[in-house]
Image (cartoon, rainbow, N blue to C red; front, side, top):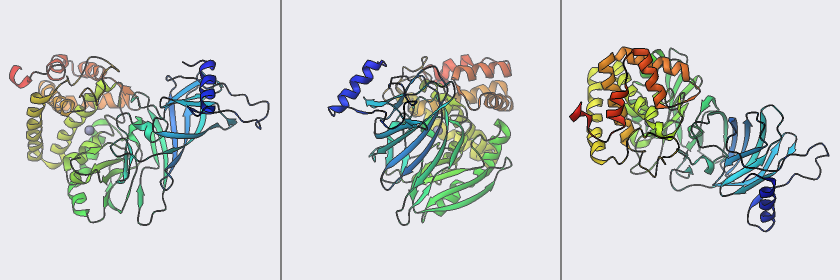
Length: 438
Ligand SMILES: [Zn+2]
């Protein structure tokens, strides 16, 4: 697909009501002759400025795409109703089929900008905007909320404005994600929010927690060590990449949903976990691993969750004391017991782009706990300080880019002189229990 013929066919289908598409208008002058819509998933998205109206569930996405010789651009829009696609110079040719928006973009030799106007719908599950008051599009549901590439390797920055006129509703969201992030990182929440000021870190990041009315005690308890942990992460790994305002936002995820989501700079934390110091620090640490350095393939999920689970225990030990750290490692140990009894897939599959993180079971405690214990075992070989330093130099080298777990392991080897691969094979590429074999 991708030929002019295919686009023409789609537009003909549109006339029959079978597909949506746009044609350039007649009033744009002879100089404006944009190319036909065509399929191209290789285009690099640089920036998306989103304005969403939560009363009408409509949005405007102004998308900057890196320069290319290609005149095609494809975006995921499976849950959107596209109403217009334009460039600053005039309307663009576009078509929608199979949840995919194809656009024809003039190849100008410089970055291209297009504006997509669309409507979106509320989702009942964690696949977009939820009426219970927040968005969540991890891992690949961004196309239910805005035109996007869900591939975490394609990072981009964001601006966001959320409009609502509902009485008593406060919209909580970052006005910008100033550095490259995976598309699942953007989010917003609406509700009866109140703000808790947590102070400013040594690195100059003002931290805040937003809690739903009546839940202040849980927010205070959960964030007791957040500022200290944040400063430990800054000092150990490097400057926080997502601006000078950050923190956490309580969200009502409903019964049975625990934990949080790394929507940096304002992470979401389920009401039931808002008082969890572990969860608060875990989501914070994703600003460095998972966000700042994002995963190249879903198979590299352990680079995000394993690294962050380890860093959470390290940071908590540093700021809350050895006993708090030992208690967390004991809890991890229990989770690891569950993993080795129930896992269905290795925590670090040896492929890229072949595993469906949801359907194939990779989204499980395995990458979290096997990852944490892999690092713990490696720290026993090289020393915790040497591992901290190597993780920090990797972050500084790679912030703003996508990395594989293999690249991280190779970096650790180079920095410490000790090859982590034997431990990685035992912990991450096996479903045996390394506690019994190592
Ligand atoms: Zn996580």
